Structures are given as C-alpha cells and as structure tokens.
Length: 255
Image (cartoon, rainbow, N blue to C red; front, side, top):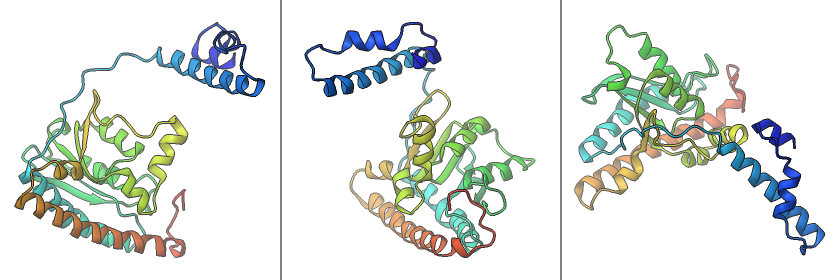
C-alpha cells in the first residue's frame, strides 16, 4: 500500500497481488509469488509515469584513422599526466576534450586528493571551462580513458557535450580494483548502467569499435597500441592501490 501511495495510485497492492496469486499454490510458494507480483506491479506503475523518450543522438562510430588519433591522445597526452598524479596518490582516470577536427583542446587527469569530486572528467571540464578560447561543447568530442561514472557522465551532459568516447568499460575499471561506478548506480537507482545512447548524448567504447574493424594491418596496429596502453594502466593501478593507505592526502570516501 505504501508503494502504491508513493507512485500516486490508490489501488492497494494487496488486492492486486491477491488477484494474481493462484489459490492452489502452497503457502510458501504463494508468499513468494505475492512478493514478486507486488514488486512487478509497483515497477510497472512507476514505469508508466516516465515521460516518453526524446529523439536519440546519432550513434557514434570511428574508422581506423580516428581510432588511431584517439589512442594517441590517451597514450601521449593523458597518460603522462596520469603517471605524475598517481605518484601523488590520485587515481588512474583521465580525459581530454577535442575540437571538431579532433585536435586536442585540453587533456587532464584525476586530482581527487585536492578535491573528492575532481575525477579525471570533472577536472578536465573544470580546466576547459577556464579557457578563454575554446569551441562550444556541442561541436566538441569528449574522450575518457575509462567509461565515465554517474557523476562524470552527468557533468559531461550538463556541460553540453553530446559525443563521448572512452577506452575501458566499467568492467575493466572493476578489474583494476575500483568497482564504485557500478556499485553507486546499483545502490542509488538499481540499474547496471546509464543509457549509452539517449536524447542528451551518445557514448561509445573504443574496444568494440576496434573489434568491429575488418582484419588487417590497421586492426592489428590498434590492438597492439591498446595492449601497450593497457600494460601501463595496469602498472599504475597497482601502484595506486599499493600506496593509497599510506598516503596522508588520501581523503577518498571508498578507501
């Protein structure tokens, strides 16, 4: 009943459940069925109140040339800054903002020891916002080393970026010892991830785009580049985790 009141309906859940539970079930099974039916009813009632979805942003794609450029930015512009900041106790996540021609406007990395919300993407947006001469976000491309967490993808959307590429998905981040992205979305909203293509932005992982390329020299080169970059990030992740407990500047909530 409380659930029905919260979603704005007057029909008591117990009456709905009674109508959905067969009388021939044993008591324990009937209780389980009743609980499942109640949960399903509340979910459907809530879902019925959602507004219709807006027109989706265009799906993101990339040819070998663009993928090579994006990996170059990660390896040669973001990664060196990340290496320096991991030595100061910060996490391995970095980002860059590119213009419509995929030239780098700014590249930055995580600064959480200075401020808990200075994730790589947030700090990049903060530094980008301070630039006097920059292209509008709607004409720019956001590039993240790791799939943006719920905080960062929200900031990317609020800033006005509509295109976002990333190298490593949440599952890789979890394997590197940082499962908070997945945990927060599950605990707060009971969802596994955001909608990767929606009315506000489109995101795409570089790994599936590389995997979709036809066999050949380009694909082999890009896979070798990813392997080289991944080795560096794995080493940095190990360094971060081995040193974070002794770091006096570590103010992070989940450590």
